[in-house]
Image (cartoon, rainbow over all chains, first blue to last red; front, side, top):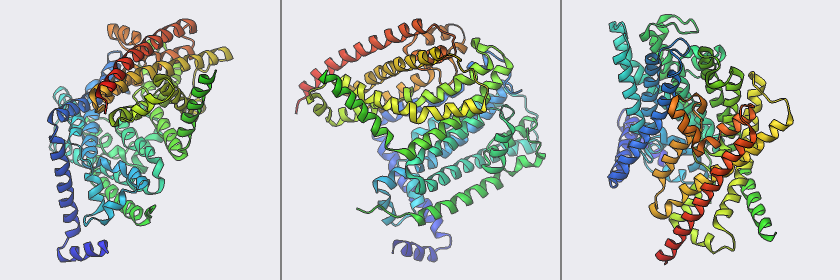
Amino acid sequence: MVDAGARWAAEEVPGGRVREGVRAYFLIAGMWIRSTMAYRTSFVLMTVTNFATTALDFVAILLMFSRVDALGGYSLQQVAFLYGVSSTTFGLADMVIGSMERLGRRVRDGTLDTLLVRPAPVLAQMAADQFALRRLGRTGQGALVLTWALLRLDIDWTPLRVLLMPVMLVSGCAIFCAVFIAGAAFQFVAQDAAEVQNAFTYGGTTLLQYPPTVFATELLRGVTYVLPLAFVNWLPATYVLGLPYPLGLPEWAAFLSPLVAAGCVGLAGLAWRAGLRSYRSTGS
Amino acid sequence: MGAGRLYVAVAAGGFRRYATYRAATVAGVFTNTAFGLILVYTYTALWDERPHLGGYDLAQAVTYVWIGQALFKTLANGGGGVETELMERIRTGDVAVDLYRPADLQLWWLATDLGRAGFELLGRGVVPFVFGALFFDMALPADVITWLAFLGSVALAMLVSFAIRYLVALTAFWLMDGTGVIQMAWLVGWFCSGMLLPLNVFPGALGEVVRALPWSSLLQAPADVFLGRADPLGTYAFQAVWAVVLLAAGRMVQAAATRRVVVQGG
């Protein structure tokens, strides 16, 4: 009934369903922000902790470089560049859509049904659920490291390289969003096995913080051709840094990130639809 | 004798409770293995660049990674044991029921946590470790004694780990909302236990300090026993001292906290 009603509404305005989703997302996210701002001190503390927690990953890299001058042929500044892009894009995706990872719990305790009867797309409701602005801590930390790397690196800036920077950040964020959506879709089937998703989300961002030259070829092929995380930063970043990508892909592959991101989001959307259709409530 | 049986039953309950979620266990094994893989490659690059870093050769460094992944959940370096539940019970006041029971609060939760840790070791630890041993060149001890000594050190690590997390949980008596403390404990535990980087690789004074802190009994101590780089008895003594000190601190805080519950009443 609800779905039929929403479809009817969508017929009235072209692209209405998307607009409706975005509107619902901002309304719910805004509500959560207002609710967290009721405890300002707590919010500030949590944001700072979030910043510090994620900063430790970089401290580990600094400690490594206190003992070596290069890792897989990359200098500290070059690794910091990879780290910065990986953390910033993942941090943004985590803030925008990271709540999706709670889907398994909602299926288990039956609260997903509440979302199904509300007149707004479930995806938007799930994504905005418990929206946590404090997750800006991770993004901020990543952005700081990225800025430091850009200031310290001697990059031969061409117009294409300059253009690639924002393209890389936006596509990277979109790819991570797709991973979150696909992971949530998987939880319709897996439920308890929600943790598998961490291997691709948190595992993914950790992987991308290190130079591609460090990893085995099979692993590189896997994250380039199968689950294309390499397009978040490895491929575009090696182009910007003027370094070769280990798999010997042509140079224009660095510019494929937006296409790959669009493909990932599309596929994740299909997976989400299939998951939501297959959902059967446990009932009461 | 009767009391001993009670705590064994509680521990068995903790074991069974965590053993119930099979799909979650398989998922966890997968995730630990994936993280292990990422770490193994970065460590390989690091040790290629600087062989014998921190006194480990490459095979020992790789072994360290897989020990870390195997013990990660067991020792709950970053939290995730029974302390979240205890905190929630303190916040809601359910802890009053626990205090009513004819059992000691600390021993009760210790037994639950040991049961949990035992399951995590078998259910989540063994497979990633075997995976590592099959696909990578690892420094496995040839004699049974070292394996047993390692298990002894892991058991002591479980005690220290619980003692730390029990103290963390008790802060809820004063703070009510423990999210911030849990995060801080996670932060320190993750970093100072050597999950990110072996503690013997930490440079200079920082290294000296983190190696003396209780968190080094969690991963670094058992790993060094396993790799034959530390005398088991000396390691046991170090771990035992921390376990006793922290458990005693837990008792004292608990005594102060329970007096507080009575004051709050209601």
